[in-house]
View (spheres, each protein chain N blue to C red):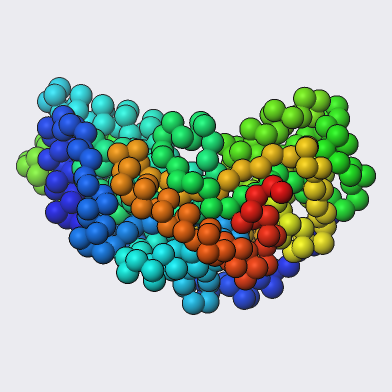
Length: 222
Length: 265
């Protein structure tokens, strides 16, 4: 291929490109928190003995897990104001879309982790005289949390990577800035490589932090 | 943001039953607030954020500044993408699109265009080692012509290239890279951007089409159809500035051909 690389542009405009990281962080981390908490609630609904809660939980997961994030984002940012008059900023629309999608994925991660705990443990705890709350506190949640963590980390990484989709509604994050600079300097390969380096650094740091959290496990699953 | 989230949740609870927003008097609001919200998308030489200063620069930015200077109306520029321009206008995110959007009958079904203030033609960008010299050379079996989907160049390519295959891409970077790596024979785009691209990239060369082998497009501002008073206001500004030779002056300042202001001679 006849292409002369000029990575010098990353030295010239790398700080502008990396400045987009702030937007990636303020979108990704609130979305991760909302998705983690909402996913837990949805998993509880999914596993509830009440049919109505199960139906509500599974419907939410089916809708938001299957809906492409791009479509969700465009709907929230452009269609919602037309329908309701409620206009969210690009950052707010992005957090909402990524939280909705992420919570559906997190729910499935929790469900898998909780269902992996053999029912015999619950029965054994019950026969030892533990209350329902104590069973949850001492048996189910500690094991469920740590066995869910690797799958949950995957969901979180997916959310961080999905931040690049917000370029569609012009959130000035790293990918948007790479596009902006490409229009001016015609160096797409160099600038997108720069954007990739920034995202890889962010995701690697996050993964390392999550691994440290995994090491805190006190209860090995049986 | 929390209040907005609560509002959103309430709306969803009521089943999104709200009726469409009634059109506000955009022009009245602009006059009373003395502020117009302008949607712009990056375009080299026309609208671009200077990475060092963070300020917008370019021919269109100078035009917007001139308008604010003459009318006293402050302009707030909202940076977006080309694909989000019309959707944002319809959703009320900005009052007007001022980024050199080409008026086409297809787009006119969605937004109201002002009079044209500038003009561009279509030219091709090929690899330096390409033997092609004209549009006819490019229109050959086995050739792929790269375009950005949804642009006027895309429509032009479909109309004129009956032997070559027209391949559309979502952004210019990808389309130009197709040419660089030899997957496409040419990239078809507007005359100004392609001229600048050819100057910037030594691997590429420009093919300008003969006058009867290209197509001219006007550059316009766009507003919602209900904002006819704003349209009138912008048209008055454009006509007055054309008579004052403002767009020729801008073309000279930004090192662009004089035809940008005059169109085909």
